[in-house]
Image (cartoon, rainbow, N blue to C red; front, side, top):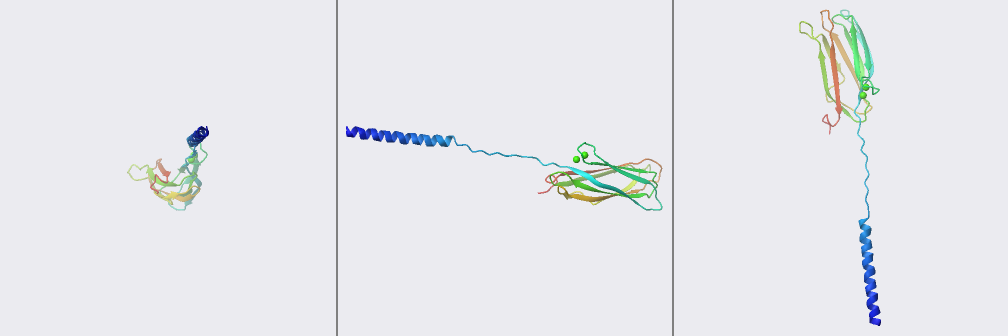
Length: 179
Ligand SMILES: [Ca+2]
Ligand SMILES: [Ca+2]
């Protein structure tokens, strides 16, 4: 009889250990690891600030120039500059100073600057245009600006209406070759 009790005791002990073992394994199966992440993309944005006109005195050239910076896409910042030069004669020269300001949240690189202008009937450019202060490859960090000067010198000697168009293209820094 004593021997039987001992066996029952051993069996009970073994069963208890087995259940405990199952319980431990079960506890591991229900453990959970959580990883929570948030990805918010940066904003690439660039604008004109501080546009102003300085006429360069030249006794040979006369005219008037006005500059308006406008917001073409409704996002609240000025992204286009309209320059109107009227009653000009050859040699009239103006300098338009402005800032190219990074108003986004990521660094940008100037990727392209393209100048196109009308020509006179002789095939000559109607203007000499120099854009100073900014060049392809320039980097501008968020909140920083590049002060620039656009110098326009009228070459056209014929009466007419001429135009020019300049685009400054910015890309985010890593696309522009940054590392
Ligand atoms: Ca913008
Ligand atoms: Ca805009």
